Structure formats: C-alpha cells, structure tokens
Length: 107
Image 1 (tube, rainbow, N blue to C red):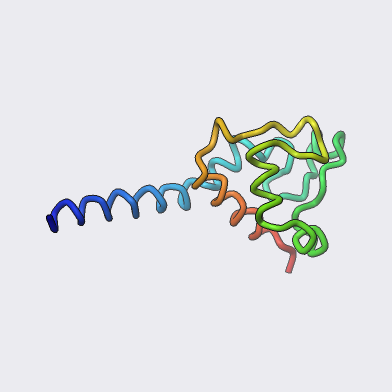
Image 2: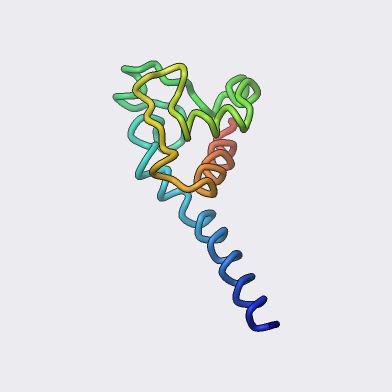
C-alpha cells in the first residue's frame, strides 16, 4: 500500500513540476509570437493587433486570474485573432501560464 501511495505522489508531483519547468517553453511556442518574450507585445502581430502590454501595473491590476485563464482557454473577447487553447493545453498548463504572465509585472 505504501509503495502505491509513493508512486501516486511521485507521479502527481512530477507532472506539476513538469508544467512549472516547461511553462516558459509553452509560452515561447504558443504565445511569444504575438505577446513577445516579456509580455509587452512589441512584436509585429502585437503592434498590428494593438495587443495590451501585460507588464503594465494597470493591466495586471485590471485582469483577474480567471479572466486571463478564460482568454487562454476560450480565446480573447477583446481580439478575435486570439485562438482558444483549451484543446491544445492542459488545465495545469493554462494555470501555469497565468502564473507566468503574473511574472511580467513591471517593478
């Protein structure tokens, strides 16, 4: 019984650690081309679509975690070109992206 519990705990911890370690790679693969490396949207597509700068304190304060999560999962209500990722990312990856976006907050 203890071996089974240990195995389950190891699998659970390793999957969440995987999401945390690789979330920067997910950002680079799925988000960077529009939102930029730093969330400032200083990219060709970011400028063309007038994408918000996620590093601004006002943006960080105005957007709740749930709103960010919903935009990632279902697409942005503010920009129809923002695709839904609910079929491409796991809920854990979406949650990790919300946390990653919070690290962009300008100091």
